[in-house]
Amino acid sequence: MSFQKYFSSNPDIRAQYIFNLIAPYYSKLDHALQDKYQKTFELLKQKVPIEGLTVLDIGTGTGAWAAVYEKNASGTIHAIDFAPKMLAESQKKYPNINFSLGNAENLSQFADQSIDIVTASYVLHGVQSDKRAKMLTEMSRIARKYVIINDFIGKTPAFVRFLEFMEKSDYKHFKLHFEQEMQNYFDKSDRIFVAYGTGLYIGYK
Ligand SMILES: C[S@@+](CC[C@H](N)C(=O)[O-])C[C@H]1O[C@@H](n2cnc3c(N)ncnc32)[C@H](O)[C@@H]1O
Image (cartoon, rainbow, N blue to C red; front, top):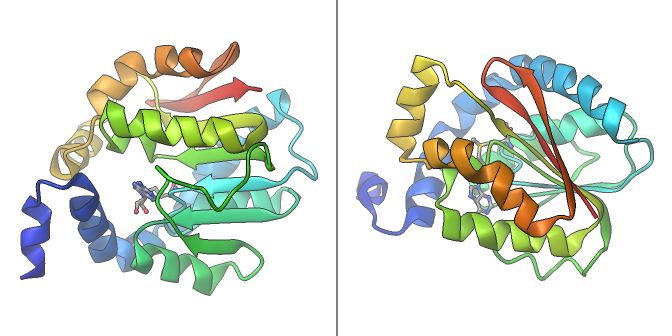
């Protein structure tokens, strides 16, 4: 039975099960997420000139982070996710974004240095460090200018900690070590605190 996938020892099967299950509910949060992401984006624009740049959003989910780039006049936007039902929600809403099914650990469909900005929002804290390393390797290979990670920094509210526990995410380790992990990939990197518990990590190519 499919709920047994939640207990799978394969973290990809478990994550796909969870995100396929919650896709319609996650999609309903899109407006609230976009308001929050727009504020994050205002800070990002002070560091990175987004106008006209091509973007690849990995683990795009229901598309809220990719949609903020679209609204702020980016160039062509690609977005991938490995949960088909999350992707189906985003495809319904954002016809101008190029969505496709894919695993962020192997993005061989994108050539080296072929996209200006490669970004991920609330994806990397969810996976263990070996998987995170594979994702960062791919992101840094594909990016021509910037790798931008929108994710947890600092304290995490109690209800979010509960959700992360249910997801069996790596958020505690992520918060402690991710800044250092970025420095392993980029000669120059930055961390921007946005609001309680959240922020941006930027790697410069
Ligand atoms: C917490 S959601 C974030 C969605 C969206 N980026 C946002 O900020 O609203 C995490 C998303 O990452 C996707 N994901 C996790 N691991 C992935 C992988 N290895 N390849 C592709 N997508 C992945 C999940 O399917 C899910 O849609």
